[in-house]
Length: 379
Image (tube, rainbow, N blue to C red; front, side):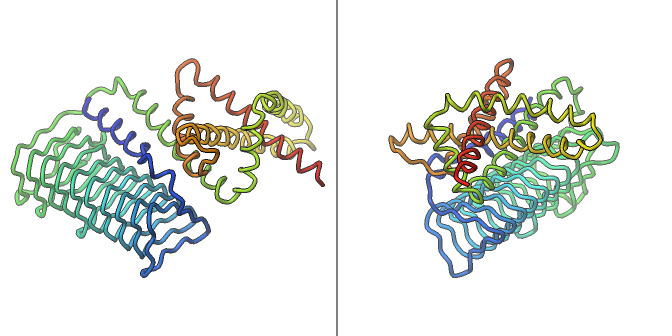
């Protein structure tokens, strides 16, 4: 039960952005986004690209998506990021919420850390002011955590200082999945759920009790898979959405305008496109000469169907922001974040979620068709 609560807590922590954050206007996109040492950015900073490097100061939140994110400067607010690699060596005045393949922390974080990664390393210079919540395959904790360390990992090393309790669920491995080194200091209890006993050095300092719980029978494994599948689908949609609104800003803006102005007229062409292309591709598969074309059609259909859902999600977010602000304009980034979170959660509702998803696809495909046909007419 405790493990389930942790998963839900992390899910919410990663998805919920500060209400005002999405309305900021510091947006930057490109192959390489760089904030120099002497540069100071007022307010929240939104960035997407191949590599994002922050050597300067951001007087707000850093909200980003990239292949690699390097933070060497100072962030007054939170870091909310999705990347392949996240490296934080500078100071963070707020929280870190992130998902990546590898996350390396080696600087002070004044509040909480909530992160998901294949590999997590909290280096010796890392210092977490409050609590740390982690989900990973491999985790190394070599720095200081003032509060609690909680989460679910396959295997881990604790070689730093934990001010309060450690609450970990380990992987179902025959090997010792948790090592507590001689340098470790735990100010509270060490509570862990694992198949085998942890390797705890006799020189480690543990002020409280050591409590091991055997791994339970996974009667609710389906729920765990369900939560994680939906979490990563939302992150994937946000990353693709960032590409759409930054690289194809002019095109997406025109599509959204058409979708908002005449949504009912776009459902029928969207429905026709979604239903007619797969049978055409299937028929082409039966002819040798048509196989390459069939593959192209199927690939195009899959990509546009996915993009269509994201476009409709951005439109929903746009309408939500407009209704809240009572204005005729809404920032694309804010519309993306709010719309994707709302719509992709609606898509998961049992029995009716697939219907909502189909409607979103039809509307989005209709918007793409309307824009494409208008461009062809102008040629």
